[in-house]
Length: 221
Image 1 (tube, rainbow, N blue to C red):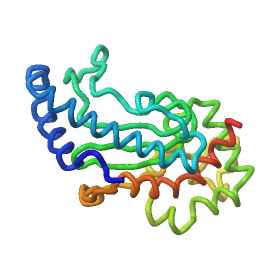
Image 2: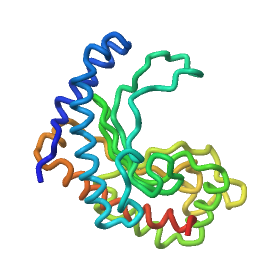
Image 3: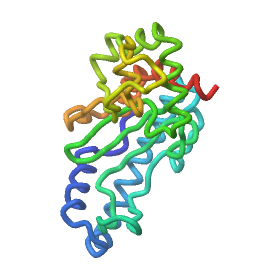
Image 4: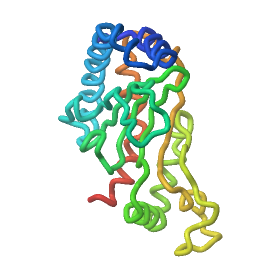
């Protein structure tokens, strides 16, 4: 099944939006946006379906619950530009509102990515994740040292300067216990999407992240 949208066309629109981030320009280009958004959401529905074939937490997720709106909440922001400069979506139980480990795809000019893991967890969840890693080091290391994982993904996390006080400073997994979130990311370029079956390609690459997500989601069992 071929993808319904042209990512180059989508990124070209987002570049123009970034340079003209105001309501007058957006209104003049609203039909163009609606067409691109509709085709992209069709692709996202296909991606959800494919990932749902191997991850039950994604199965049945609705596109409207996965994707983010383009309109920014500017009430408390110094940046008053009304529109986001990217399209993105979360694939996991609860969609974009989830607190569980999930998958994330982000389409932005010069900032294309796909990720997995747990974003900005609240302190009780973060503490539970650290205890899990401490309790199951062999399983965790087997996942994060897997050849396919290390070839495709890298960690992109906020970290503490020191190991949390409940663990020894010389803990063998100190680098992971200092993390304040657990995000494995692949930075992509436009060439990655220059094909008719990019949806299938992304679905297969996200499959590499499933063992990590499954492990992290033990804390929600």
